[in-house]
Length: 607
Image 1 (cartoon, rainbow, N blue to C red):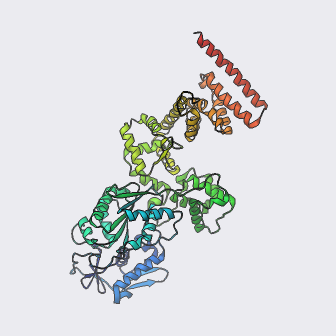
Image 2 (cartoon, one colour):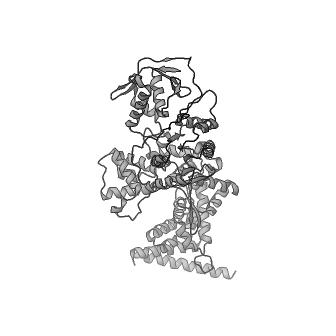
Image 3 (cartoon, rainbow, N blue to C red):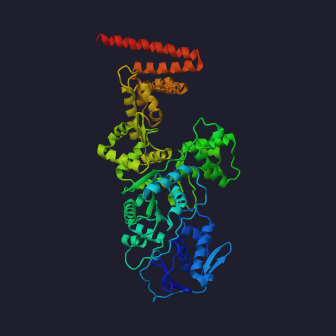
């Protein structure tokens, strides 16, 4: 026990007594007091206090001043024992000593009849682009006792939860409290963190959920359990027991997956909206992702330009980052140093470029890679394996496609279904119910991370080959037209899977690819690019495949394959350049190869 003036402070139990009665102060104020005590009269700087007491939150200095004022109020006549050193920090003076004779009674900061008066510190920046989301969360709190905000890492779940809790505070007269679990690694300490946030002083022995229930009995409280995903079972138990025992208590949780407790209502947090590629300059600033980027960029550089070219580059960056708030904030900070043009040109290397988050942010939010490393560690082996292989899909994909490419990994179908359901529930894979059936996709940043893990595990070539082979088979089997009654034609298939076709062709003709697969894939699918008005791409893809057929290793490529490629190339060339010499040569070659195919066909009929 430490005696300071008339107060008796029990650091191990986080309790303060004055004349034998408990003194209620917030958990942050107690942590500040503990820092001052342990400094033993030395100066404790403002920065040290901010880093120790708010390690996971960006707060303004006035929050610190509020808690210092609360400590001085608790000291009453001894308030001058806390000395302010202007511009530097605080120190505790006047002498204080340990007194082993005083022992606390079983008590709690919330056992008397007074209100808790617990509140979450206000955020330092205005929340951008989340007004409707916050309103939806508040409405959900009206109809459910447990509301869980789910979404991928860096999507802004904590920020939305804090804003919603702040706006809903009047509905909870006995308090709103934030329980930050990011730094808690052991499920056994979830209850301790909750008790500390509530200001509950722990008596001798282990803290029990029943003791917490007793302390908050009859109170109208909102408890925000933040960052639950790595402690999901313990958080679920706390939420379930507390809400069942107290009709006035509600829980607002943030997690990458549901708590799965009785009465839980899920609220997915989407990315910020991004401007379309054809958005006019005047409309770009209407996108919340651009608003966030500009706000953070101007915080670093007040001269950040808003001319047409700069806004177009900003829009492109926000689209590339899929509207992910953490990635946008990191990119905006880099823009102040690198400039927009360099930033936009190097965004493919997300994880080397997007670093340098707020020093007070969670360690896993300092860089994009750290955030994904955290999520990846929480997966089981099957989920990790599947996530890596899903990185080969450049666009959305079907379950059949996943089944086909994962087949080589010897992952049983039930395990595969469990794994993809797990990745969806943990917000790493996005499920889309389209008119063509269920589809899945990864955010661009998630895909970039998955591809890195694929490379780290030496699986890139195998995954890319399986991916290319699947789409070759898919396009071959799709009918050229709808005459056989099947609804999906080859053109439909190429249109639906255009991003994956491009990924497969890019790999096949790369230095580590398989040009034989590439030529076959180009012959069956590239002609469809012309029908999709992608004339230049049709010409370039066909030409690349034709050039590859000149390699002696591909001498066995059939005349029919070459004719398809030549016809696509000639048609695209004619459309782009008109009747020029190259176009006439191309069609002449098509005619010659066509005759060869015809001769082969007649020869085969006489056999």
